[in-house]
Amino acid sequence: MPFAGVDIGSTMTKAVIVDGQGIMMASVIGPTGAEHRHLALVVMDETTKKAGIRFEQLDFIVATGYGRINVPFADKQITEITCHSRSVRTLFPTARIIIDIGGQDSKGIKLDAQGKVTNFVMNDKCAAGTGRFLEVIAETLGIKLTEMGELSLKAKDFVRISNICTVFAEHEVTTRLTEGATIPEIVAGLHEAFAGRVVNMVRSLGIEKDVVVTGGGAMNIGLIKAVEEKVGFRLLVPPEPLLTGALGAAFMGKDLLARGVTPERERRLEGVTFFK
Amino acid sequence: MSDDQEYYAGLDIGSAFIKAVLIHQKKIVAYEMFSSGGRYKEIARRVLDQVLTKGHVSLDKLSGIVVTGIGAESAPFQARQFSDISCQAAGCRSLFPSARIVIDIGGQFTRAIKLTAQGRVANFLMSEKCATGSGRFLQVIARILRIKIEDIAPLSLKSQKPVEFSTNCAVFAESETISRIAEGAHMEDILAGVHRALAAKVAVLVKGLKMEKDVVLTGGGSEDVGLVSAVSEALGVDVLIPEQPRLTAALGAAILAKEEKAKTR
Image (cartoon, rainbow over all chains, first blue to last red; front, side, top):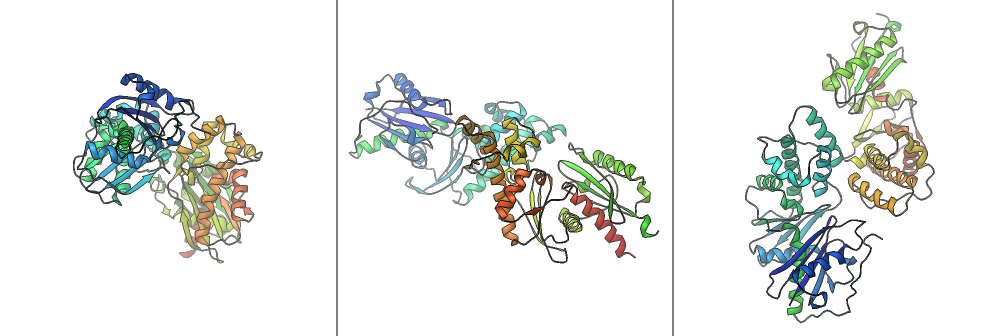
């Protein structure tokens, strides 16, 4: 009994297929983007192939993420808040806070002892505190986003970045470079500023152990360390942080079927335009 | 020394430009402006030297000098400092005695200053340090559209249907611009949309001070006629623009230097 979850994020599209026991059979990650108009379909197709099943065999398909309404072949759309908390409940039953750092937004989710969502906060208004902040500045520094974490660990100290605004921080970074700061020190400073922004956002929820970090931001070891410094304890990170939403979506489909909900309408396996 | 021999200088060390104004008998005799390039001390010295040379005055013959701006601490000499708010107010009220609101749209901030009927600063508000609240927003979008800053205004005036941005962040607006262009939006509509978004932020600041006429617009932003018309539309009044809108704070600094001197007599 396979179940699929498709998570269309602002930057990446992710798909996961799990079996009847909830064990992951396959996953695929591809970039979202205006030019990837048929991506949901392509990613789904690839994932079924990897799992060695046919699309028709899927018992339930749940779409999540900000582009979830653009998955015409999904049986149900569920918010990423619900899907994230669903997979975290399985992966880390002790979790009380989820910090999801995405490409163009970040979220804080509060869970009760049963793993239910009690509150959440979100920033999608300002690039600061989202993956976009690091992406923009990585480009300015001529380094790869994916190497920032390791790079920052080489710094003994960090350079304080006083600007919250990404545009102004970009300028500040070049000024610090001309003053002789090293790239690792600057990147460590960026992580420190980023962590401050994220922790401030989540503070209103009441920071409580355990804290799980998901999304692309969780793959940045330097950022994780900076957040740990701010909160004063170790954070939990799933083995594949990018897949948290898609995995939760697949679990939700499994839960729904177990409760007797069956997919209603016929699935249309076709590509869609994300951006109208 | 008699009044007709007195010269006063004002130096405004801003984040992007350093400006100096030399006044004599209430008249501007010389002014100068250079890009700071992050080298405040060196450029500040050069700007001042230039303005003194132009005015045929030596530094030790100056009756007074006041320094203002974000980099005032980097002044290459000992001088009295005044806040840029005070200087902006002094400069604008000398040019427009009827001014009650002064809006300064700079490269990093937008400030709105309320003046009393006597021309004193009653209150002021500053935008958050966010690129969408300043001229920087236009620079970011101009860069992505590959057009020059000076081409923004004439282009934007051709707009028939200004774009309404779904975001309040310059970084996100940059990507939105790309998708809007891909969807067929015209460049002029994007620029007019940026003007409107910026004007809306200005209007919020002015509302916080309670709108009163006349309104003076200064800073680099006031050199953009598209932005000026968007601001005047957002406020519902015509706005006054100084001839040299980037120099008003430096002018105010020179005026305050003169006033300070008068106090000591």
